[in-house]
Image (spheres, rainbow, N blue to C red):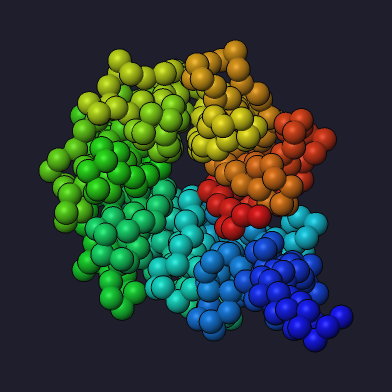
Length: 451
């Protein structure tokens, strides 16, 4: 080849665009950058890593987009928290944190936290340090208005020595959300009162700059025997509304639930609406019919004469809520409820925990399957439980299917009963694919984290 042709060939080769570098796994951790590895030079950093997340260290160990913990011990595995209500002789029993493992959950891998008749539990990062806090709504012992407990999270975990007491009056429910949009989460407690006084304030504790909650910085909202609660922007005005499953005043005790409407300064204690319900114990908010408006699900427990009564779905609309836009779903002694797309068909399903029919606690809890046509008694599934109080759903084992956790309270004669994890699959749920976890009068339950 002549020197002229050789020079031309070399010039053409130099001008060709370089081939893109191969998508390689540079740190041999099983993930490439195209597969979501956010640091392909560190074998401990990859999507789903179980290396301990250290908030604020500048390293996103599990590549989830946050340098913060999504679960309680920061290992990337979902954890379970059961609020325990009662032991053999007393309500002063510990509640349980079950640590997620690769093979599920075990009584040998759990943390016990002191509580007093805990009926509900909520989890959130309250101080913005990247570690999650645990808040238990303590009902107390009969006749004893025990405080509720806030366990602060840290790299050292959770302990009674790092706990704050929050004044409540027989607390039965708790939710956490930034109600006043100041960037700091707030804590809402339902105060049930009793045994003789039910018309009392429930409490909204406001988050503060110093991340400390005080009775001096709380708002009282009148309720009558309140149980569950929910925080959501129901009317789409940008302000969080507060919903209690039970009435705002004695005149409607046991037969109405209450909405305090939000404003720029929080819920207005003088502005509330009522919805007819029968001794409701829990409430959930979700857009069940995908129309852009949040709907409300109330668990109906009993009528005074019977536990076989309807629970209600109130459908939201631009005009708000009304009995004309309500679906009645037959339930038996319903306590907690939750909403999730369990069968992955694009429609949200409703899960009701069945506590008792008046004679036995060994009942089926109910899944009402969502569809284009809504919900009906002809499209539901029963799952055996024993005095089920609450339930929660999430993918616990990373197989792509939501799993279902029931917190069981009593067999009728004993409070030392197992709660259940029903493992989800393409075939649904069955007793044959169920795990048991010891609890002490299990009441509230929350899943912390998701695969």
